[in-house]
Length: 162
Image (cartoon, rainbow, N blue to C red; front, side, top):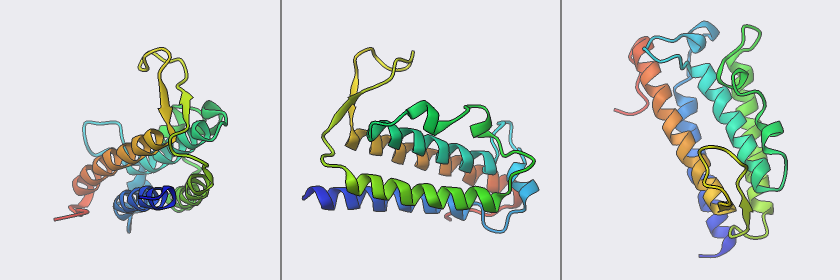
């Protein structure tokens, strides 16, 4: 597999899982996107906002930027504010997807490794390749699409699949 083909495969797979998440938002009002109908504090608008911020943070890390600055405030990044709309969050997510695709296509090498930032959940001195970062973003997106699907099904019975 060529580097360009592998990059395209990763982008397309990430796009597929983004599509599952976006599907869960179809037809929701802003109030429904803020609703927390399960025992979890998660809500669909907050999930969309979170995966956008997380993806931007990891892409910044992968391309040598400031991961923390790109990801923004952790708490605010998980909650759809009263002044935010689902439409606006989805537009930002779509922009993020474009930014990610451009960044991935611009990478010289998916094997380029960068030391992870110090955090209790990372073993000191660990490095991740760009490929590993993208796989992590893909896994996060898929996991949160599942969360959103459960919330949506609780709201009104709609399912992404099945």
